[in-house]
View 1 (tube, rainbow, N blue to C red):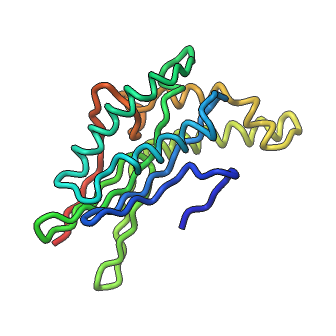
View 2 (cartoon, one colour):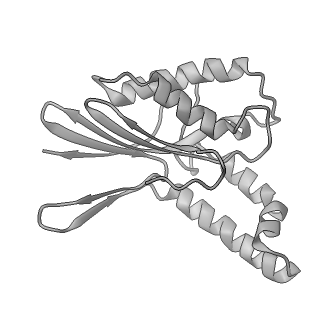
Length: 193
C-alpha cells in the first residue's frame, strides 16, 4: 500500500496489461506554484502518459521523461539550481515480455521477491539511502545540540538536503527518475523465468 505523508499523494501505482510500476515521489525542497507539489504533478504525469500496454517500459519511461521536461519547462518554475526544482521519484518496475518477468528499480524504491522455496530477493539501489542516513544523523545531532525538535532541525539542515539533491544522477551521487532532455537512468535489473 501507499501511505500519504501529506493531504495529497506523491506516490503512484501504475498497472498496465504487461507491467506494474510503483513511483515514490521525492518531496520538493522548496515551495513553488505547482499544486499540490512537483512530485505529485510528476507521478500523475507518468501515470497519464503510460500506455495500457507497452513493448519496452524503460524506453517508454525515457520518452515520458523527455516529454515531462518540455511540459515542466512550460510551467515557468524558477529555481537557482535547476536540479533542485526538477521533480523526481524512485521507481520499481515489473515488466512481462516473452514469458519472462523483468524487474527494475531506479533510485531507492525497493522490490522484495518471495521465491517458491520461501527465500527472499531484495532489489534496491542504496546510494540515496546512504545520503539520507548521513543527513538524518546531522539533523539528530543538531536537534540534540540546539535542544530543538527534529522538525526544526530539518529546517536548520536544509542545506545538507540541498547538497544531496544536487547529486541526483551525478557521478558519486545517486540515481533517480526525473525529467530530462536526454534521459539515461541507471537501473538495477533482474530477469526471472
